[in-house]
Amino acid sequence: MDFTNLISKVQSVVNSESYSMASMAQNFSWLHRGVAEIFPQPHDADSETESLEKRLLNADRPLRIKLGIDPTGADIHLGHSIPVRKLRAFQDAGHTAVLIIGDFTARIGDPTGKSDVRRQLTETEVKQNAQTYLDQVRPILDFDTPGRLEVRYNSEWLSRLDLGKILELLSTMTVGQMLAKEGFAERYKKENPIFLHEFLYPLMQGFDSVAVESDVELGGTDQKFNIAVGRDLQRHFGLKPQFGLLLPILIGTDGVQKMSKSLGNYVGLSEHPSQKYQKLQAVPDNLLSQYFELLTDLPLHSLPENPRDRQEFLAWEIVRQYHGEQAANEAREAAKSGGKEGALPEYSVAAIPQFPAKLAYILGATGLCKSTAEGKRKIQEGGVRIDGDKINDVDLIFSQPDDLYGKVLQVGKKNFVRLVK
Image (cartoon, rainbow, N blue to C red; front, top):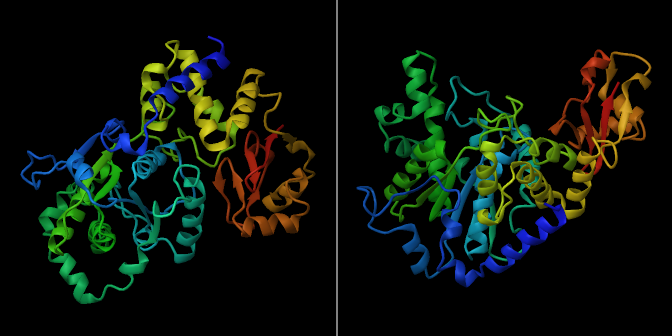
């Protein structure tokens, strides 16, 4: 199918099915799209005989929709974007998104799914990571409409808890309940250490729900325990318990394991458009439907039947979301031409006179910076990335050319170069 005609066809369907805020209040297809579970349900023993749909219909005010993000790293990938996109859907339906930056809880680190204790981050590391997170979610969320977004930092209330309040929080849960949490249970069985400060994490995340008086909390399917703790604490403090809305964990581009930077099967939000496109156009056929459902708003019945067309359209659409239609078209043309025309500028590492070489020097040599001194300054400012990963070490050294081949250097948001032989 001609690609231009394909875009026009899908866009016509999108226009015909677009929901106004009023219609979204009655039609809950946006609410259920890509959702793994909403709890409690009216028939659950834990429920107050009210469904989320009913609360949305009967609300006399915008509901407060909570999403917490712990800035334990510098970058977000497409898997992280899924709850953020659902948060935007609630914004579009007229509700208030409460984005909590866990600058306090990040110093502990969520123990969910971890087989060992996480390294505690410094306040400086957390602050730097938090700013990059906000930069990366800006293309997704509505930052401009008054009343549609609150950005809160949980140090605002958690840093003020005195010992009496901490003891009160601890008294709401038993050790048995805490050990029922999947990661803790596994570690306890294997006799891996569990430190007492880790027990505080679910309670602190739950207290976030009390502090912001959330009506709904969003999270991955691995967050059910923590969200349920928030319900219990809200009830303890005399508030109406929130609903939990759980979203699937995205499978990575390898088609096997969940998307993760450590596994190398991720697509980073901060990556160059051509990098995004090249990764996404190779997504396995069996994942295409899930990627379209979770990462786009496109009507699923409007998509092309041919798997190759679907891969190409997925890559184009996601690049368009984050970088605009022109960048998506350029990335597509670059991919069609084998990565030559319109692709990333290239720089031969052979032109670097000697190794070991500091990154700051390499930035000057490639022309991304005017000098080594400017390269150091850009690193200190957090404006330098390698393959999408932010670099903070001004003294980073590469011992040999092989360490650089194929890597993409980035300075700021628009200056990129791929290092080649």
